[in-house]
Image 1 (cartoon, rainbow, N blue to C red):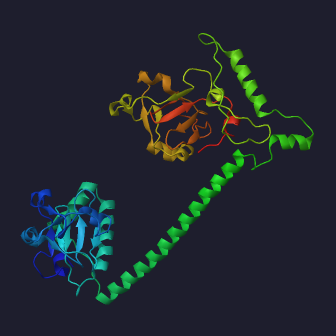
Image 2 (image 1 turned 135 degrees about the horizontal axis):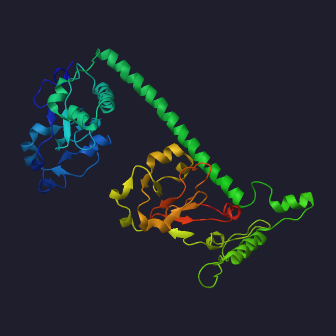
Image 3 (image 1 turned 90 degrees about the vertical axis):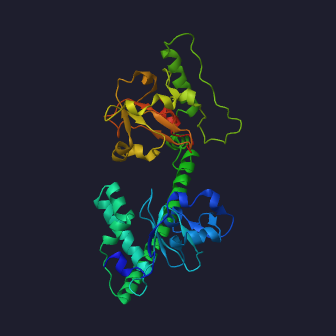
Amino acid sequence: MTLPEFCAPTPNSIRRGPFGSAIKKEFFVPTGYKVYEQQNAIYDDCELGSYFVDEQKFEALKSFEVGPGDIIISCSGTVGRIAILPAWAKNGVINQALLKLTLNTGVILPQYFLFLFRQKVDELMAGNVRGSAMVNITGVKDLKNILWPIPSLDEQREIVAEIEKQFTRLEAGVAGLRRVQGNLKRYRAAVVKAACEGKLVPTEAELARQEGRTNETGAQLLERILTERRQKWNGKGKYKEPEKPDTENLPQLPEDWTWVSPEQLADFGDNAICAGPFGTIFKAKDFRSDGVPIFLASCRARTLFNPQAWIYGQRQMGRIFSPLFRLWWRTADYEIRRSPRRVCNLSRRYWPRHGDARCNKNVRKQTCCATEIFDALPKQ
């Protein structure tokens, strides 16, 4: 059946919203007849919005009237979203971004058409480019020509009941999954906390005592690293000792552990710790289909360990873009997000072919020469 065959045999049962000039802000009043907007269809919530018109304006827009039991469909921007106005919905009018349908409930159930329409939208979006799909579902003329499978009312009721039953099961499954994800998140946090407090595995000091041997403490390891740095220094001017951490308000560490600052762990080369450049340096015209990867703070840390996910999300720039030569990244470098603080290692195991890369302005780059200490620090 086509849409006109199962819509109500009354005027304006299929109605696209008025021109924008028909509903202007100067027409709105604090209370009165509600103006239904696109967001009411998108979020399936008839209470959203605070635009109303008085009775005089409502009568002028009478052909665009909508009320309980009617169907509204978004027709602009986010197209194809559909909602049924519940029995307690206020009478009002639709704006220019909506299409209204008043169905003949002796032929089709509104809830059945809602499921049917959503399935049709999915088909159109999957089988067409977005522009073609928009024409098919927003043009009233085209919409009237679409054929819809309409069974008997009894069968419609059975179909709707079964769909709702399955959806209830799915929602319960999703709720259970979210609980599990929340538990896993808390478990992961507990594991990291235990590791950073020296409670996850026996510490090196405990193992050394059990085996009757000596061990290198964190302070000794740090001193060895700093000594090697001083000996290998060949830069300009006098060697400057890295800044020590302020440990006054820090928690107590396990035996033989020590607090260190990023400067103490960073490579002593140029720009071992640096923030990304100003956003104006990265321009669309400089992007290439291949070249040097640009790592973005918007990509979650875990995607760095998934080459496929990262490749799909990356932007790359050709090596000819010389102003960024001071922002090279290398495998085994660390990335620290500014907000939220996330630390991620650019592992050589997962990124053997990318080599050097550049960071964007929302990340900091740090080349670590003592990863065993850095990995022991709390990361949030």
